[in-house]
Image 1 (spheres, rainbow, N blue to C red):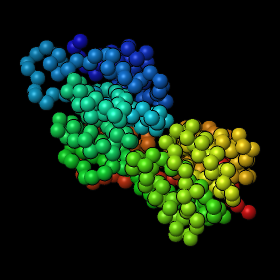
Image 2 (image 1 turned 45 degrees about the horizontal axis):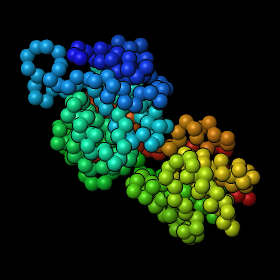
Image 3 (image 1 turned 90 degrees about the horizontal axis):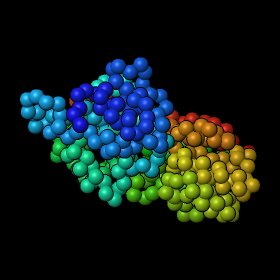
Image 4 (image 1 turned 120 degrees about the horizontal axis):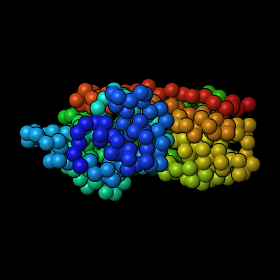
Length: 341
């Protein structure tokens, strides 16, 4: 297949994914950017569309050695579809008048390096955006640098940024301090914490923020109050049950992400614990399910859509290295938390 322009390419991807072209990559000809793209079918359309490698671009003089296909690839681990949707929406907005096609590529952590290397060689994208947890991987960012592909990493990461890389992040630890201190300010002294995976840097920073706030206020932060989860709804249910079975049980539970906080809400309902009258619950991220929960979830908003927009704009401008861009978090107060009287 020969790529003639970005619209042809978008149509090819849309045809194999079953999506309207506006959900794949808004272009200069599209009427409006996608606002709420479907999540189920858009992840690997590029693989099935068989976008041509560099050697199959339109006929004419030999292509320059570093010629790129007009693709911007959003690389994710497939574990948090709600965050993925938020970032995708922001990127689609930024690409509304661009010839770049947005492609979602899931890559599991165990084969991430091999898959990304093959992807870069086959499709020669104009840029790569890495989402957590893949954004933490220096080997993946190194592959982009070696291939001279502009790379934006969203979320915390270890080490320094190499050339042609850009980092977008929030103060995860400081945000957790703020949220925990806010719960303490509402009278809660015994606060449980549902931790995320230890190997995930953002989860570790949020746990440290919780521990900082508890220590600053001279409150118990013993191991019984911290239960490990894996960022899933199911692990939130299990952690919620464990925390609600200890005596005395916590008056509030803070989870490292919204999905686990929703699991805690579910566990509380199963055990006859009323939220927020008997238990206050808070989370992290401010994803769509948190806003639809019963009761709606108090959470710390991470501006995923805004960071997605910034990432796409950075790639459009050719990508650049430089200082990290720090985005503000926001405490979103809803009815899952009540003062302890």
